[in-house]
Length: 185
Image 1 (cartoon, rainbow, N blue to C red):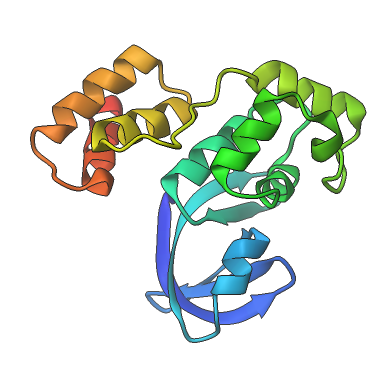
Image 2 (tube, rainbow, N blue to C red):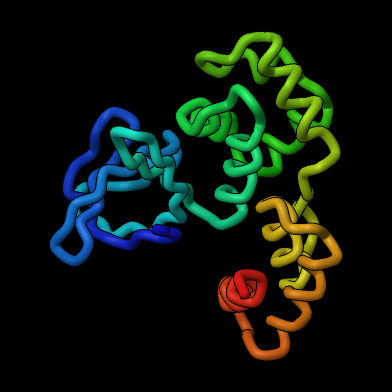
């Protein structure tokens, strides 16, 4: 499973970039924010969500682990596919998307291409109050716990894994990777 990709942008397509790493070019669908910041020739690191179908393997790239977590929660909602979730991610930063869902803003969600009122209601019903607000948190432990919970890990399990990882890792990214390794055992 591909979790991250770092490579040079060789092409910019409509809604996607071609990242070349190790002599292989990967087409990765991205949000408009990622696309606007990815110039040809620039080295970019993305968090990846793989979507396998019978006839294809599609890659979707997000700029942070926090984005990947909420993206995966969106894809987990019945009726929301990976492309639709990518369009939802274009509504703004993670904190704004969480706020839209938590306040039940159906009108804002239905502005997204392909989302009708019923799908918007389903997203709100399934995710309202279940997303972690990381705004205002200043400890790395809270950031790691928030990312894990957004990825679907139980809050207590996430807290224990994050606390254990904080003993050996200094950076948030290092702590998160360590916590994910522990949870994968």
